[in-house]
Amino acid sequence: MGSNTIQITDDTFEKEVLQSNIPVLIDFWAEWCGPCRALGPTLDEVAGEFKDKIKVVKLNVDENPRVPSQFGIRSIPTVILFKNGQQVDQAVGNMAKSQVINFIQKAF
Image: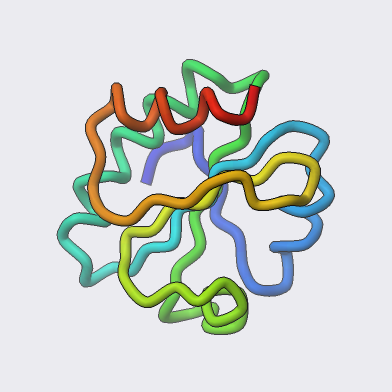
């Protein structure tokens, strides 16, 4: 995992995501998920480029079942964009860097 993304848990979700003063992109993933592993470096790169504008966090669905079930996550990777504690958009599956950038632009 890259150093620009932050690992969160069910317990830190509210503080890191809902109470964040900048938009947050949350990546729901698992160790065994190939597309999740493919998306990881892309998200880390985007997190580095947009580090003062958006926070990119990762939540392991195997270790943290509460938040994924709260948002009805059935497939991974799923990314959800939050702004001011509200869900702005959601996407499922691996994405190219340009797609991730287009996705997060919705928060600005």
